[in-house]
Length: 433
Image (tube, rainbow, N blue to C red; front, side, top):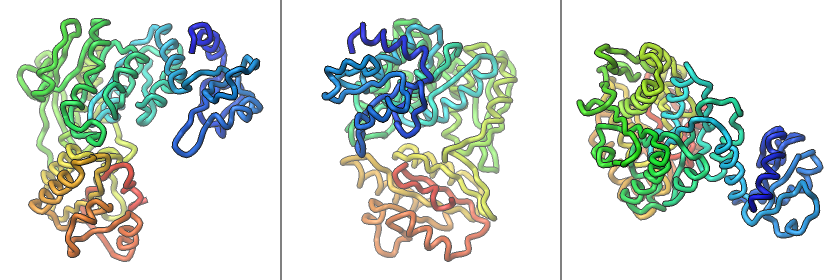
């Protein structure tokens, strides 16, 4: 979109009621963006949007190229135009923007950081996992003008994704959670994953901002930047902010962190030692922004997990570790290690397929099968076609969650501690809904 057209659209945006990509939910006064998806084309609803009362529409449908209707903004790429508009809004603001990249834990870390920063600042973040080329710009365009700090997830499925999102978000500071085996189907190897997630660093360096990194991760310790300040967190002595896990007999994670010679305790409502670094990131960020450590500990202790991420859910007489939002090999191993560490004689693991692993699919699933064979569990159940096809006939396995649920409802299962872990496409949480 040309600069002239973009600034004209921006003036309309400032007076509009917001922005929307769903014509069914569009309200009068909002700007509608026509985006072509896998199952539908939003550009087919341009006239509908206008009749609903849209203040403007963005479309890349060729038939609107020569339109004389000044409410219609034709562009060669609606998604790029959305990004341009979001970038202009961001750069005209006085906000502090914090970008989050990494393989695992972005959403939980984002929510923990928002919990802490909201103590002192008017803070907003991307809803859910709005972290791609559509969701992140929409998040920015929905930020209120008087916001002080915005936290944005910068997702990556291909090299260049984080760079593109960083151009729009223009982050002052950044968090990189970790480097794991996510989206191996597109990235091919961990080296490409590291390269992709570190694309945010030059943007932070240009603003002489701060990087918040896991000081216990050798890969993170190798990162450097001439202009960006780096604050490490973790259990190592070299970390800027130090902490450690408190041994606990319950599934919930407890940890301590240290500041000015004092110890502060976080008794969390989340499970999993892997969440230690998510909490420490929020502690590190909070101290950087001068939040009192006592307030940080109280805020993080009160945080409750949601959206099937590290949730501890009691239903009937069973306790579920509901971690079924997503899974890749690293997060699956971490979830199983956590289950193994919990003292109980009635532990079950219900694990589902890990998707988008490409040529590594069979190898990574076999490693999980081998790991589970060595674990001290009362029962292991596998769900999904990948596991189903790899396992022998005598294994306890189901092709779908519906088949598992049918078995589940016919059996009386009581007093168990049950891990539910799988990729988003499996929707394993439907077992207990």
